[in-house]
Image (cartoon, rainbow, N blue to C red; front, side):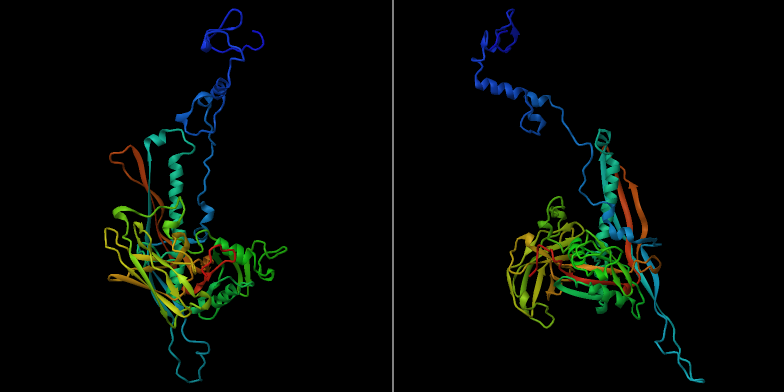
Length: 495
């Protein structure tokens, strides 16, 4: 073979040149035109990052596929169930869990003083019977026989069992804070609903859409209130959102009020707050958020709105402003707002219904009237009420949760928005979690259990995972809340 000749074609002649081939004889470099070179290159190179194996040709078709052997998860893990992991779990003997609490020993300070022969006052302790209702948390999983037989990254059945357990824990964690049996009777009541129902003004602080004090005065005051006469408790833990932990505690708390040794500085992570009644640990929890967007605005992989006959029917909504003495709308809040609502049922949420724009002035109350949709198989048990930011839009992503409310009897449910609940904020919960106090516990009728289900006409292995429990708050005087906290780093601001 002499310079300028290349092997090209089906065979090589005795003199080293190509015989025949695509060009019917010897082929020189001058005859190997650019288009042929391009086709030759494409035939032996790796391709242009194609990912659909059905389209592979040339050298790309020769390549082995590469896959990372580790399943890369972006999901909640056991460390994220902060409240669940701290709860003491005890057994409930029945779906109706009865217990007795003692709230007073009788008398008052100084009530036992008497004269030598005076009549002795008759006093006694105060006892009451309480009832808690166990709720039934369930999830179903199913893996086909084919999937079990395939070579996969992980054991699919084991992975689904773990995911089912995490799904149950997610429900418990969220409901422990925000569950409300009046809105959805299948839920147990969480701290927010219990504190609001108790309505003890000494145990509720209102940040009014602002941040916390630089000395965490709200935590100090509430810890003192719980420790005071008539309550005799101790706050051991604070639970707050990640944003509140970072912006309100880490970035603001005076070093003099920080627990732990070392050189405490503003801007460094805070483990706890020093109070006159002991140290209070600060726990950040991903399930406490600066309110919620409507389901329709939440990004994947959040479940889509329930559709079809299972969906609760979307209501209609209207808002009307008018002056009211209970209003907390001030001059800085005056402006234009939209309201929106989703119907809530066991099946999920309805599509979002929007109001017209409402002009709101200082001292106004906006009466939000929700007209119920036509009942179907899944009657709405409650509604999620949302409000836009001041002078914002009616795009779903521009709404944040104001309140979840129970469905009223009749054709309409009315919610009076006095700006008592500020959208885009989050609560900070203070709890007595000392094990011996038994103030807050997870009461279980059935611990987390896998229950086999039997396939009928499918080659699969189905099962249910169950957890029958509820949050028992036996000492409501040992829990407190700072509501409407807006962290300084919030990107969505209500006003």
